[in-house]
Structure formats: structure tokens, C-alpha cells
Amino acid sequence: MTRIEHLINGKPLAGKRYFETVNPATQAVLAEVAQGGEAEVNAAVAAAKAAFPAWAALPAPRRAALMRKLGELIAAEVPQLSATETADTGQVIAQTRKQLVPRAADNFNYFAEMCVRVDGHTYPTDTHLNYTLFHPVGVCALISPWNVPFMTSTWKVAPALAFGNTAVLKMSELSPLTASRLGELALEAGIPAGVLNIVHGYGPEAGEPLVRHPDVRAISFTGSTATGNRIVQAAGLKKFSMELGGKSPFVIFDDADLDRALDAAVFMIFSNNGERCTAGSRILVQQSIYADFAERFAARARRIRVGDPMDEQTIIGPMISAAHLAKVRRYIELGSQEGATLLCGGLGAPELPPELCAGNYVLPTVFADVDNRMKIAQDEIFGPVACLIPFKDETDAIRIANDTAYGLSSYVWTENIGRATRVAAAIEAGMCFVNSQNVRDLRQPFGGSKASGTGREGGTWSYEVFLEPKNVCVSL
Ligand code: NAD
Image 1 (tube, helix red, strand yellow):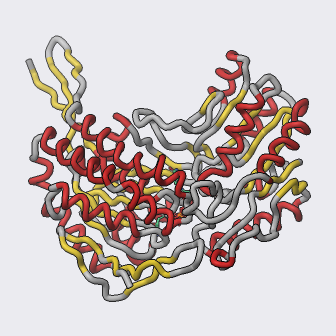
Image 2 (tube, rainbow, N blue to C red):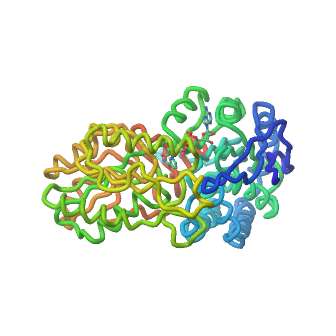
Image 3 (cartoon, rainbow, N blue to C red):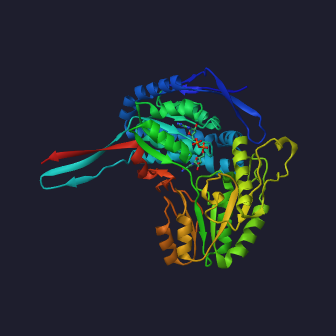
């Protein structure tokens, strides 16, 4: 049986205990993973603290070269890394191989470019000159969820390290495998021991001592809103980036290019198994086109292929865990109890070959006639469950879109440029895509408002968590 150990100060550290990580398509055990706690966290933070001065002092072009090397090593291992990611998470291979793992290499290449360009501002007066310097923060705690874990971990590791910080990474206990390989590749690239440390384990045992640790200066967390709240309370005064849950509105007006809107709506709720923070899970459709849209959307959902995530043709693989599957199924049950109309999917089992029958599978499910106050429209289900909600006009669409605790992403479909601009401005969300699905540009501020988090990452927005600005005021 493969054993996955912690990585502390450049060396594997065996666990005192181990937990299993399983393939959600088959329940086969993939590896035993070291189960860390306070002792391992303390050792990892101490290693990161010791490595910090030399790493921060390394000239940015030298750090950039190491980042690019790591990007190259990842790019050379895309087939293996994506197969491991798919086996560990159930995210389909077509996504992990073509999009998600290559994006991890891009993250290192991009922040290699960024770190040599860190500049500042000047504020001259007649008597004084103010200018800003940006310094690395120190030891960063990087905590990742289980959906797209490799891409998410590199989205944190790349800026943290490129800007001269050292880090302790804690992956989700449900998907630790690819990040463990990332630690090995970082050493192979020549990144010094102690700069990137990895502690595996459960949130309360390993995550909590990490965020509480007094030598941790910044926390970049991606995960649920409930955990984000706990971390903010436990961590005390530190820099934060909190990338949390979502229940994003996907608003379609009657003048939209319906074929394109339909494609994008299907993609934004069913790709990545619906386990996607920016999922367009509330699909708001103008009343005049609602019936036609609902029929066409459900017809598309019925044709979606559910099955082996290793098969290139599969669109929806298994949910990450039996517990998560049970949660998604509870919401499907609740939708019918709340009075929504089940157009397709539901609690039946998809047709699967015998080897996948123990997998955590659920059918792509579409509810119509959803009232935005229903729990299926308010709670983040984080699975392939779409809620179709009718609206009357622009005012009504904005009201419903904003009637949610969350504020991560949003989508507006209309050919009317004035309306698109007004609605994009009025929606309470960190991001709004107009006539587009979620297309990621690494320069854009990524993040959410309200219960979806605080802080933004991407481009210079990543300075907010990973760099400390200092103002220098010189008397002339
Ligand atoms: P989660 O909050 O259960 O766990 C996330 C991570 O936090 C895991 O590594 C977990 O071990 C750790 N953790 C748990 N308790 C902790 C504690 N007390 N202290 C420190 N760490 C702790 O989330 P999840 O179920 O793994 O991921 C799904 C959630 O992530 C969804 O809500 C989704 O929307 C969100 N998400 C957000 C974004 C974004 O960019 N906004 C991206 C992806 C996922």
C-alpha cells in the first residue's frame, strides 16, 4: 500500500497514525496518509520560519527561475498528475488533464513573471517624499479544499513562494495525493528545504493548530463558509484571504443568445461534477422564455454522461465522498418536499458497470418552479443540482439574484448592453461574467463578498495577503 508522508524541512516525516484516501468511483483504497496534529504543525512552522530569511533574501529573478522550473516539471507530468487527481477526487479526466492540472503549471509561470515586477508607489510633496516597499509576510498557512485540489493548492503556493514567503500547506483529508507530489517536485526544482512544507490530516487536528500558530503571519484559505468563520475566530490577528462558498445566480433575459446561454448554463452547473464554488446553481430565467428554456435545459441534462471519471467522454463522475453524496441526495429529496418540480434526475441510480456500483454517484438533477426562498435555492448543495427560477423583469432579476447570503460569482445573459452593464453593477458578487461562462484570467481579482469571503487573489490582488506594504517617508 502506498504511504503518503508529511513533508517537513525537505524530508518526508512518517505519521504516528494514518488515514486512508479512497477512489470515490470505486471505494478502492488509494493510499494511507500520515495523520498530522499539533506536533507536526509545530515542526512544519518551525522549518518554514527557519527557511524564511534566506528565501526572502534571494533575488526575485532567482526565485522566478525556480518557480518556472517547477512549472516545467508539472507540465511534464500532466498525464500522471491528472490521473492521480481524477482517481483521488472523481473530477473527470477531460477536465483534469486539459484544464485543471495544466493551470497549475500556469500558476507558477505567471507568478514567476509577477514577482520580478513588484513595484511601489510614490507620494511626493514639497517637503517630503513617501514611497512604498513591499516585503514578504513570513510564514503562510495555505489550506485547500477537495474540489480541484491541485490547481487550488498551486494558486496559493505559487504567489506565496514567488513573493518570498515560506509556507505550510494543508490539503483536504479527502484529496491529498497530488499536492504530496507537488512537494517532491518543488524539491526537484531546487526550491530549498523548508520553503514549502506539507502537513496532512483532518481540519480540527491539523488545520486548527496551523491557523492558531503565532508564527503564522498570513492565511490563504479556500473552503466552506462555516470553516472560514471558525478559522477567523481561532486565528486571531493575521492577514487573511478567505475564498468561501457560493450560490451564484445565472441570469438569462429574453433577448439573450439562447443557444449560447444554454451551453454555458449547462456547463456552469454540471462541469466539475457540480462541485464548483462558482457554479451557476440558481438559474434565473425571464418568464417569457422560461418554459421553453426549462424544457431544453432538462433535455440537455438528461443526455449528460455519468460514469467512469477516467473515461474521456464522461461529464459527471462520482461525488467526493459517501457523506457528500448523502448531503446532495438530501437536498434532492428536500427540493421535492419544498414543492419544486423535478424535471430530470432525482434519487434514482445512474446506469453503471458493476465495478462502479459502489461509487458515490448521483444523477444530474434539474428542479423547475423554484422559489428563491426554498432551501435548495439558498444553501450551497455543491453537486449537479440546478434550480430554475422564473423572474419578471430587470428589477425582479436583481432582487432575486441578491437575495442570498453568498456573493461569489454571477452571470448575466442579454444582448442589451445597457441592461448588462446595469445588472453587472447591481449584483452583489465578487465577479460577474456577461454573456460568458467563468473564464479565468490570472490577473483578475478572484474572490467573493458577503458569506463568500474576504480578500481577492490573482495578479497584484495577491499582494493583499502575501506581501506587506511599508511606507517610507523621507524629509527633503
Ligand atoms: P471545508 O471547509 O470542509 O474544508 C476545507 C479545508 O479546511 C480542508 O483542508 C479541511 O481539512 C480544513 N479545515 C476544516 N476544519 C478546519 C479548522 N477548524 N481549521 C483549519 N482548517 C480546517 O471545505 P470542503 O468541503 O473541503 O470544500 C468545499 C467548500 O469549498 C465549498 O463550500 C466550496 O464553495 C468552497 N470552495 C470555495 C472556492 C473559492 O474560491 N471561493 C473554491 C473551491 C471551493
